[in-house]
Structures are given as C-alpha cells and as structure tokens.
Image (tube, rainbow, N blue to C red; front, side):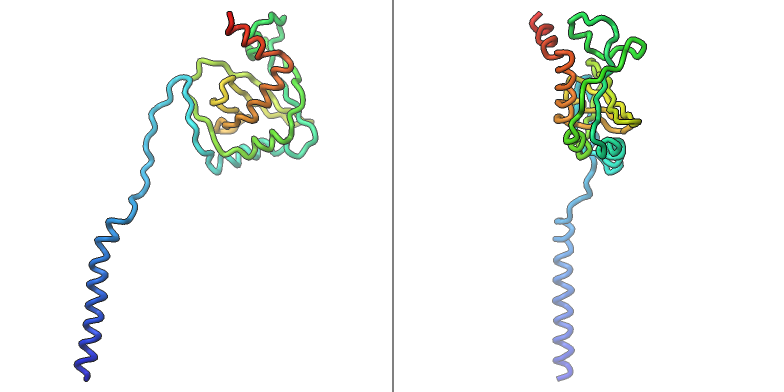
Length: 194
C-alpha cells in the first residue's frame, strides 16, 4: 500500500516534469522577440514623414497653447511684406524681419486651437526648397510664434515646441485667413497659368 502511494506520487511528478520539459522548447519558439526599431533612411529635400508625438512633445504643445484656450478672442497676425503690394504671389511670402510688418488677419476659432492642442502626430521633414510663412497668435499679453509652409505635410511649427505638428485642419484655418486678406490662392493660380 505504501509502495503504491509512493509510485503514484512518483508517476505524477514524472508526468509533470516531462510535460514541463516538452513545453519549454514550445514556449521558446512561441515567444515574440523584442521589437527592434528599424533605422529610417534620411529624408530627402521636400519629403515628409509622420511620427507619433512623444508624451513630452504633447505636453509641450498643450502648454504652449494653454494661454489661448481659456480666452474669448485669439488673433492671428502675419509677418507681411511692408513694401507696396505688387500683386505677385511672391509678395505674400514672409520677408526678412527688417522688411516685414505685422498685419492682423482676423480671429482664430477656438475650436481650431483646441484641435491643434489635441493633435498626436508630428511631421518630420527634410530640407525644404519651399518657404515658411511667419505668424503670431495674440491674446492680451500672450504671444505665440508659429510658422507654416504651403505644403501641409510639413506641419505647423509652434514657438519653442520640439516637433512640427501635423494638423491639416489648423493649416487650412491659417490659410483661409491669409487668403481672405491677400487672395493668395488667386495669385498662386495666376502664377501657375503663366
């Protein structure tokens, strides 16, 4: 009787050990290897790549926009050419600071600022042969510089934020106010036709 109990216990232990021994190789084959980050090729001029904003970059973006989300009116100002408007598309490009003056384009809708603060994607871009247009958000004593390129893919550069924010909606809102003041699209169409 005693022998039988010991034998049963040994058999059970042997079964467990053998089962575990059989599962170990199977487990080794089914574990997923740690993810390796693939090195991305360098970006060519005019090329853009979209990447998620890190937690720190999102915090930076929200802190930069915070003073503008709690006020009733936020104006968008543009660094425009202070020379005579020649009617050309090039005249709309933000010139060197010594040749520029700040022009109020209108009020930026709060909904657009909120959408921008909630963005989660950055736009990484190579050297651009295009130009950047300089703007400022203003409300009371608060100022925030921003710049955009006509190419939406290059994003919106905000103040001291590390990443350029990919936001088609905000880009379009800025472009709408700019176009209303300077008829930029009409000028651009004329340049393309010529």
